[in-house]
Length: 496
Ligand code: BG6
Image (cartoon, rainbow, N blue to C red; front, side, top):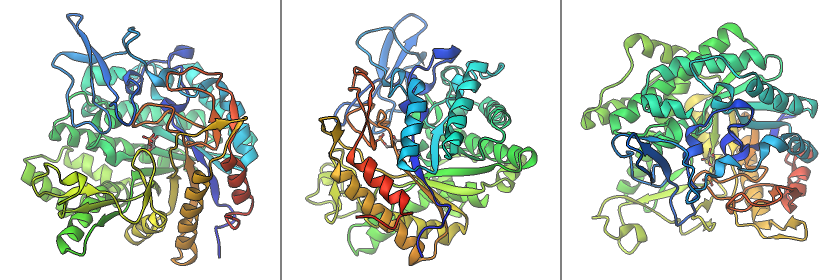
């Protein structure tokens, strides 16, 4: 009973939300570095410039239906005080990583997931790697190892070298595939003996919701999104191939954003809609874990007049080189219904399906619901469908923490974690699921991805910085730091 002895407890961050200072050490900007700050009421913008010197911004990020920059515009960081780019400073992890890893070790972390900024390692993706970029990530990995922490590297976490967005519409460009594999193998070679776990693309299924964020698309018609998704599938498979053939000690995982989707009522139409929504998510893991495109996707493409992008030979690679394990993020769940009368989603929806609040669950200020069963459900879905090793690499709750007298009393975060860890424990104890580990998202406060603000904090460690990057960047332990320390020490037995 209980979690296995070598269970990988820990936390996760991503370069564009944590490191800051993208140009330091000779690095170059990535797509995330041209995204402005926002909030839950103000959308993040992507800034751009045209050849005639005209500049502006367009909301191409999560939560926006916008799919194009204006014709002739390319994404750039503008030197204009009107725009603030949170990724340029973030949590200043670039200069604080050693202190942060020591704090993680104090909590008892067994694993730390961080992402590599491709444009820091390859400022010119067609050129040679930057020694300073490589050295930085080698230092981070070494620091982990010295503290007995197993690194897990995400090779692509919501940022693509900016030049690829400018030159070939990001991942719509086939050249991204070989450039990515070159970058991945450069990392495998440099970090040989230090890092054994890698993930290819963070939340690969979010490409429909945010094609610029996930794949650098500045023009994102449905066919362009599909082409980009398949280029990422191919790049992921070629990365797996490179690892298996030349670095047999390395395990390459995929990463899916997943939350159970419930039908609001017992009306079969609601249940079918919820199932279909989940199927759409699971198609990404079917391709990456089974090497198979589900039949319903062919039908969907046919209806929309879309063509399957890869050649038969390329598809053979995708089919053959599937990932070694499935990792996923899971924060909560969502609810679908066609009975929208009287709901917020009902207004102006013309009787279609819409997402509504779950009357049984509590939400945070950003509307994210805490679902005490979500991890158990997620783990059962994956286990039943893929029968493969599973790793929860993101779970957590964002909160506008009140910092007082050197700490934060974040009992709401402890409650959230207690319920989620219990749910995971039930999946292990009651359902017999073999789980590799649990990594809490944003263990050190980072800039939120959706809103680009610091106010939505997830961490066990508070970072003294505001929404505009002002502050001392000093680190302080929150109450949840000590709680999580106790949980890890007891291998998940003490959750009180
Ligand atoms: C996941 C992403 O979707 O959710 C992270 O992989 C992100 O990058 C996290 O930060 C939480 O979302 P947000 O928008 O609150 O930062």
